[in-house]
Image 1 (cartoon, rainbow, N blue to C red):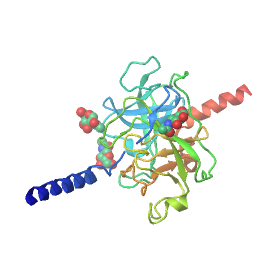
Image 2 (image 1 turned 180 degrees about the vertical axis):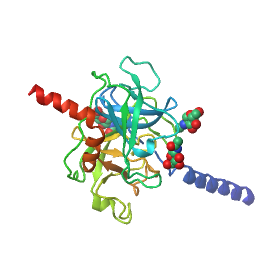
Image 3 (image 1 turned 60 degrees about the vertical axis):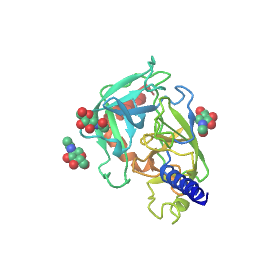
Image 4 (image 1 turned 45 degrees about the horizontal axis):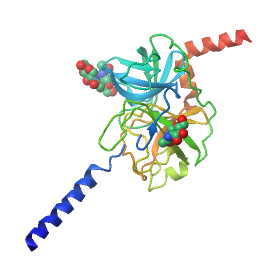
Length: 268
Ligand SMILES: *[C@@H]1O[C@H](CO)[C@@H](O)[C@H](O)[C@H]1NC(C)=O
Ligand SMILES: *[C@@H]1O[C@H](CO)[C@@H](O)[C@H](O)[C@H]1NC(C)=O
Ligand SMILES: *[C@@H]1O[C@H](CO)[C@@H](O)[C@H](O)[C@H]1NC(C)=O
């Protein structure tokens, strides 16, 4: 009798230990399925026909994503106008990438300067489901507590499940000083980065990288792609702010954007 109780207790402890091992790598955790095509700037950056990262349209022929999403071994493609990754949708179109420009300061083993510009093989066909997102040019920090929107087709559960429909999540900004506290990211968050609070079952994760953090309708930052534990409130999500990179973005995308502004100047 005593013996079997020991066995039952041992099994319970073993079960608890396995749960503890399997759970902590959380994942957009706890988001909801987005309203279809309500985020017409969202791009799915793909490799070999599979979703790899998020991204967003910043000019007719340019998508901004994260440097670590760049795969230099094979051609990348960009899907625009999508809600479902797999179902046919009349607004969906897959574009080839003409040029991939990872930020020259990005490195495989750090999350510094984690930005990637992708020039599409042709101008995107704009419409209700495909639109350019304005990005922040003014280098000012977003206040802690501001609610922002993040969306993606990234892993959405602890089992590693990848959703077919775009999901979104509202997240509060965590000010940099707090994010740099020892209990969080311990001084590693630079002026070019920002954080959002991360909660158990409410967080951005693998596959969401490259997507925009949208505050007040403007892209403030890009979900970083460095490896990190998701869904752990002690590890707030880290984003690369776009305003500090304004010069680089403008320089690299110059042809398209200056052409557009020339046109609009002429129109005036
Ligand atoms: C894509 O396919 C190529 C060729 O089959 C392969 O070498 C590469 O590892 C694949 N990349 C990914 C990310 O699956
Ligand atoms: C791809 O990048 C890796 C790591 O940065 C590098 O070692 C490799 O030589 C690159 N391959 C090609 C084909 O450029
Ligand atoms: C998703 O976005 C909608 C607005 O488009 C918002 O009402 C909803 O709360 C968001 N979902 C989550 C889980 O934050």
